[in-house]
Length: 156
Image 1: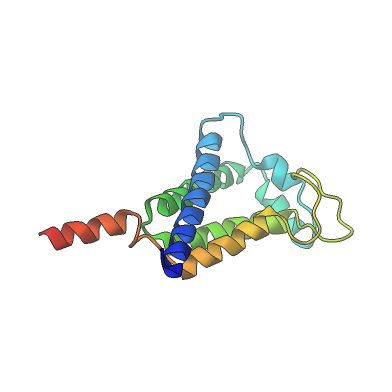
Image 2: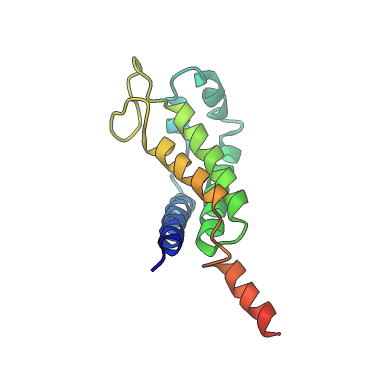
């Protein structure tokens, strides 16, 4: 197997796994009637605390919850199916940037309402970097809906 093929397969696996993660997170939130981002947003820390606290306001939290679930599922579907994957990667980077900035793992901040205790680099930042890679190396033409459409067009 050529080195290029190995890299391409590795990127496809990364794309599908991240797509699955986003879609799963969106669906779990959708089917949990008690889920809300309120606690996460209300406990925000760091330089953008006021922005995230405003998003936890009772008048907008319903919209925030709905948009968060929808964005998670859009990212998941685009990456899993390999269609509009660049748009999905950008939306995913935006979501993860918000998650990162709402609870930044900065020195001197106590980590509240997050998994583990990190210093500057956490899972959100790592997944953001992976989405940046997926943005620059789309693979839907190789494994995804784009590939199926390509074969259908050739067969006609």
